[in-house]
Amino acid sequence: MLFTSCNNDKKLSGSLVTNPITMSGDADMSKLPVIKFYKTSHDFGDLSAGESVRYSFKFKNEGKSDLLISKAKASCGCTVAEFPKTPIKPGEENYIDVTFDAKGVIGFQNKSIEVFTNAQPNVVTLTVRANVKRGR
Image 1 (cartoon, helix red, strand yellow):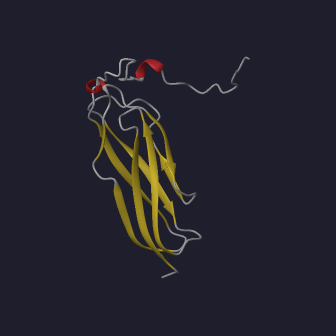
Image 2: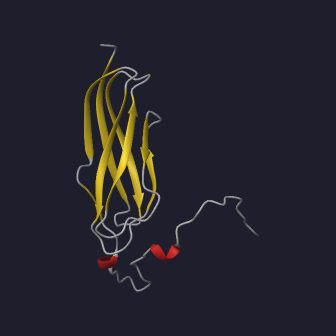
Image 3: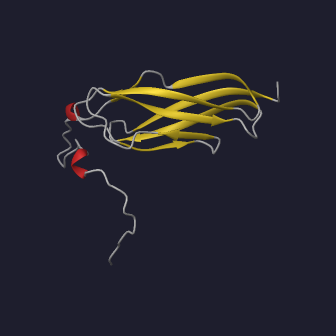
């Protein structure tokens, strides 16, 4: 069988991904990237229905190799996450920007965003909360 792809998007080099697990079971975790968020949750407080708000989660690569973020998956369509598409070098900081749109929702909202990386553990969960009220 032959599989091909018509997607010509720029790909990140496979040499940027480090797999510390060997067949022997020995693991060298010292060379991996380490994603460290300064804050993993944010409360927008009271919002009016239909309001759209944004928060930037700041993080740092505290590891010894390039950090790659492959995706940021929100728990619902009312929440969108934007993330850097290029490698984050050791010691560098960057942001995951999360937008919450309160259109069509009422009451207490607790949304999560799963951030998938090449660090260990490879998934970090961010959360945003809001109390959406009918018009002010």
